[in-house]
Length: 183
Image (tube, rainbow, N blue to C red; front, side, top):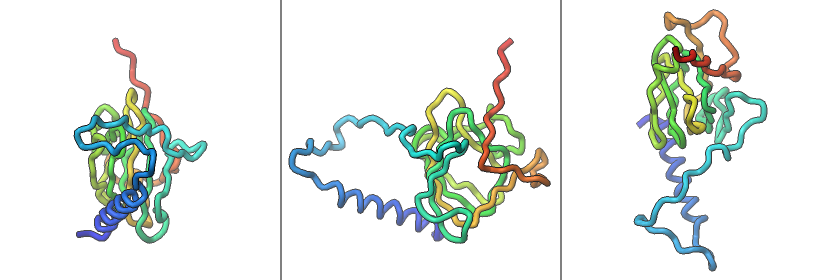
C-alpha cells in the first residue's frame, strides 16, 4: 500500500479513536442515537472557515503542499467556480465531504462536459494526468478533503495538453463562463 494511502487511512482511524474518546456521555446528555434512529441534518459547508478575499479557499489540516512531505487540506469550491485544464506532479487522494465535485479529463474547458463525483466518494487525482474540476451552479458549495505529497506543482495546459508557456496564478480561480441565453 502506498505511504500516502497508509497515512490517509491512519489519520482517519486516529481521528475516529480520538473522537470516540472525547465523545463520552456526560450526565444530562440526550440519549445516544442508534443505527435505526433517523439521521440528523448534514453539516452546512458554509460553516467551513474560509480565507478572506480568496477565490479558492484552502485550509491546511497538516503539512504544506509547497514543501516536501505529506499534507492534508480542506478545499471548498463555490457554485460556478472551476479550475482550468491542468495536471499535478504528484498523486492526490480526494474525499468529497459534502456537495458534488464536477470533474473532467479533457484538455478543453467546457463545464457542460463534467461528470459528478458525489458526497462520500473517494477518488485519486493521478499525477501528470490532465484534468480540471469545480462546482456547477445551482448546488451547495463542494467541500473536499485532499491528501498528497509535496512539493506539489500545478501545471496549466493548452488545448493540445502541453504545458502553457506562461503559467497562470492558481490562487485566482476564474468563474465558469456565463451560459448563453436559450433561443
